[in-house]
Length: 246
Length: 246
DNA sequence: CGTGTGCTTGAGGGAGATCAACGTACGTGG
DNA sequence: CCACGTACGTTGATCTCCCTCAAGCACACG
Image (cartoon, rainbow over all chains, first blue to last red):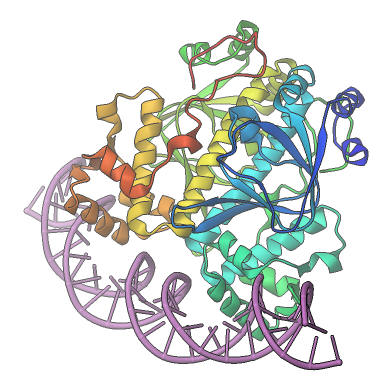
């Protein structure tokens, strides 16, 4: 927690305030549902460790995932701002969640204005990523969709500081991949086979390993600008501490 | 402009500051491209009049729309925060745009912290809408997709103050509807026919008119909670002026 | 009155879904 | 150490929803 706060591109007083905020830690195991839309009671949650997935479901049980939640992110701004979450969150690995009373977060917002601006940055970037997902699902054929998704994950993990070789190893169940891409898990399996035939990826137990990142990115027509990687972390107040990107 | 600012759920000093910000007005006609991703130079834009659509394109020219931009909204936060826009904006009607230098907007953010919090609300709601679109495109069959889209537009326009009878009248070219839903315009045409056969909508010149809102919403399995209609406009600082929803 | 723009309709094809069976790795208990 | 069950992934056959391509139509506008 402390390490995570220290890295934020915020002023010292902002960080102090965050560290002094009352909080609770909860842990989840792979496969657990972290929260649901029908849960009453609003809590602000920050994922500090692990990997989680945001999804919505249809009445017939079909699922659509939108986002992976990486560490240091608020899980659900909607829950803070609107008092209800509009999606489900599931743990893909062991997950550690910080729970903070909503009122405390709102106090933080009111007294430390750099914090909502930081969140505005994150939210805007996340929205851009979701837009690109929508473009994939709406207009790209399955093989490009998958190539694009794998490339996006690789690039985002590299941006988050994962070493290139580890970032090329993507460990996600195929039914989750299908839920991200609007495909059935069977078709995901077939599509992975096609990528293997082309020598772009190979499979190791429970993971897809990117063999030819360039070729995969080319197949996907991947253009990383939507990830806003080179954006300044915090351009709003010139005096703000230049921190490490979250 | 003045009327628009007066309605914002902000304090008087915030509104004064907005009104004192240097700005330029530009007008566009139906069909015009308002901005493109490859345009250099960041400007903050607010749509004050008319209706616009955000979309991205693939190399082969295929298009995916994500959002309709209604009046009083920033067109492109990405452009303000990251210095580049990640999508195109096109005018669906006559459109009036306010252009403000990015530096002025960033000053506003820094000195009037309620403003970024207000934007955070809007951005979070927009993201929820985009998530629902992704769910549609990924998992709903065409007829439900269309029913859901039409219902969403009706409800959002009602929330924005349009009378129920006018809100039931949706005037959008079919190729744009297709771009929202990940369908071809031919299939949109066929799908509208199916809705007509069921007595849910009818067509008048250049517009779809919802006949049976309830039936349409039922077919779509529409649940309006993702629109966060009942959320407080500005819960952050209890002393903030309770304003009319934007 | 021609021309363009958007909508409709049809025939045919294909990408991906569905349904079902089978394979493989792994953990658990005997 | 092996038998078994479960969770995931693979593969095949068939089907269907939506796309593609093409032609025709309706209305607006010069």
